[in-house]
Length: 334
Image 1 (cartoon, rainbow, N blue to C red):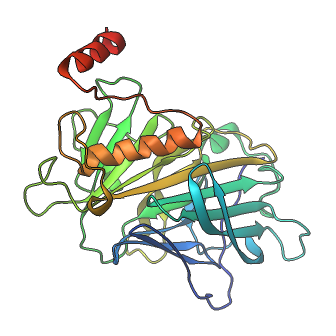
Image 2: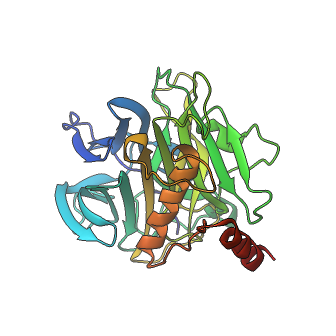
Image 3: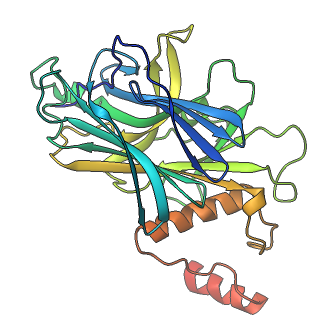
């Protein structure tokens, strides 16, 4: 059986939003629905929520899973540093003795990093009290979950653009668009990508009003990707049902169970990460001869985050001389 899940809203009044902060990023979370508000340096960039898709998708709030227990404040430390966060648990019925879906978020004290986690304690078979039968193969391939699903807030005039890294060829892997997250499905670049399991990350930045680039980097750059489970989970974009949207749907970039997964085993978990780089905390050394800041260093910081999490080590890309750089090119690029 596959995911009939949807995070949940109750008929009760919404609880007060919870708040987490990492660097210049502030995340507001509405605990009864998992509605999100991500602000950068005091300006809201993105809204968010959770969703499930099995032939159709809806953002919370909607009928589906119910809160199993009140949110729990958590804190700790791992290879990425000290963090604080919240755990949320969900069940398909009021009388359930154990949760069927766990979601959590942790914000690291330094580094502008926020990690989202979803876990399936009993697998996908018991996620919901609805349906009750095996989904057909075609329906199962249409199933996925999103935590978080990120989209542009209603009425926002910030104008977020994006750069998407997708595919397996270094020569044909980048697309861009002036509209996030819609551009992930309809990029304006020649090398078109469309999200999915082959997407490495998406870089999100406000569209510049004037000149921008390495010589004049934007104040903040955000990178969004899976943190692990790169084959069972995906960074993708979906048109999700959203009752508050005048058109009835909203495009949302999400991380979670990848389309095409027929069954989720008990105990399976997936994590994704937001990495924010601000000019104020940029490293000062040049990278590939370009000034610090902007997309280049944001992606480098994101790469450092993934390497640290998985116990890897950054191989120096820039030598101390032209001869060192030529040697590196010869060694790694033939």
